[in-house]
Every structure is written in structure tokens, then in C-alpha cells.
Image (cartoon, rainbow, N blue to C red; front, side, top):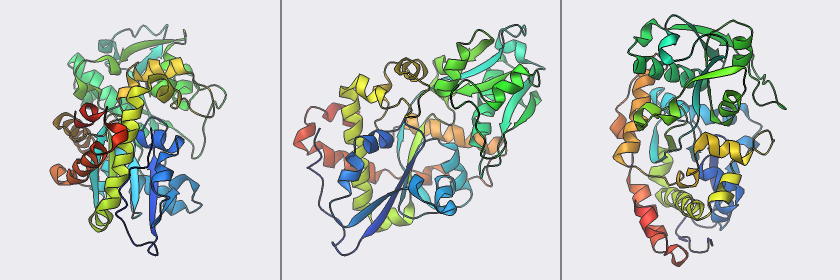
Length: 359
């Protein structure tokens, strides 16, 4: 796939504009585009300077991954931080959404006698407790338990949640990705059940010491699969969008091209999701996200995707994660994606992909 068809519309050459990007993990269109160098190539044509948030030494800039205060920042990834930032009053806009299902499992000890969701009633459910700006891992785990309780017909407000404190900056098991503070709490008998996600959760579920009570990712109703990683919004601060709509369109166009490429390259795109620091295999990625993961990177603003994101906002509001509620429909801005789709559709290199882009 070539990237020589980009619009040259932009700022004057002497008006360098700083762009920042940040994403969660590898499973985003942005991450694929970065690894293939397509995002960097798009914004190396003059007038813009592209920065990776991760490369900054400024803690406040790094924290923009959560609070979204940095102007010119494009964020793609887990939905809890951007929802939290919006509720904090940050003037951001959702300009695209992808739907990437991932493993979400509730695990117990194999010999605990807890076999089904209904057996969780009255049991101690472990919730990680971080000292982050927004504890998205805790929100993800609690949402998983609340979903399970709803399926069993229990009142989730009566669930017994037990804090599993995670020391700041600490991470267990660099060589063994199944290790975590939650797993240790379960093995030590401090809790009766834990929630794990992504490939680490899948790998842990295969360990004979544990029993998988439920894999939420297998539920047929997409709204029941909503969690921090599903769906994944693409956000930017609204003042930047209003001042530089052409740059926002170009960023989205890169994601559209990347999604189209991924659809045509199932194995290579899945291989790019294998973390660089090892521990997971291609089979783990497929087991966690499904064999159709290569079809999961197309940004849309479809009613279904929007409904899923709003369901997560409502969950976070109802369970006390948000400073305040906000008008959800005002957060969605459709024009940039519509323009990006038109831009990409005009490019000869993508004449074979118009159906995918318009879906």
C-alpha cells in the first residue's frame, strides 16, 4: 500500500504545528500505522511535527494520555480515560470508534467449587486498586463483574468487592505474563474470583490451577461485551479540530488506509499485535481477539459503536467513576471521518477497498 496520495492542504511551510499521538497497547489502527511508519510518513511532508507521547520526559505530557489536556493530541485506545477526561471538563471530540473484542474472563481457583456465574453470589470479588489519575483497570474489572451478576439475575450493588492494591510503578511477571497482583491475591486466598482481560487473561485461563467461570467475550450481545477495551474511541481536542480540520482528516485517512490494509493482510496485521517485549504468541493474540481481528481496525461512527461507547459512559457514571455526567451526543463529531472517507476513496491505491471503507 502506498501513501503518496495525501492531501497537500495544510499550514504554510513556516508554521510548524505540533501533533501528538498516543494509543493503548498494540491493538489499534494507530499502533499498526506507527509500526508500518505510515503515520510518520503522512506528517513528514512539511508544516507539521509528529511526536509520540511516550517519548516525552514531561510527566504532565505523559499524563495527557489520561487527562487529554495537551492540544493537538490524537488518542486511540481504551475508553475509560477519555470518558473520564470528558467528564472532568476536557473539551474533546470523538472522531472515530473501532470495535475490537478481547478476552474478558472471570477466574477462580480450580478447586474452589465456584463453577458458574451463579456461584459468585456472596463471594469476594477482587478489584485492582491503582493510584492512577483514573483507575481504568479497576473500572474494567468491575464492569466485568457487574455484567456477570446481571446475567445471573443478581443485584450487582450487593456484590462483595475486595481491593487488591497495586503498588505504584510495580509490575509483576515480566518473564511470566500470567503473574499479576490479582492472580497472587487469588492464589493466596485473599479473594475468591478475579477478572482478567486481553492475552494475559486468556493465557492465565489456560493454567490448570484456575477455572474460567465466564468469558464475557463470547456473549452474543455486543453491548454485554462492552469494557475498557471495547469499543475504542479516537479522540482529539475540539479547539485543535476547529483550527486544523484538514490535519484531523489526514490523521483519520491514515487509519482508514491502515484498516483497509489490515483486512487484506490477516496474519501480518495480527503479528503486529504481538507485544515486542515477548511473552505472547500469535496464537494468544488470535485466542484473545478472535481470528477476524484483522477486520477490527476500521474507524466508524455507526449507531452500534456509538451506543456501545455510551453504555460504557453510563456504567462509569452509575458506579462513581466520573466527576460529572455530560451530554453524550455532543461528544461525537462526524464530519472529519466523513471527509477522510471521501479523501481515501479518491485514491487510486485503494480502489479495491471502497466497500470496506463505506461499511
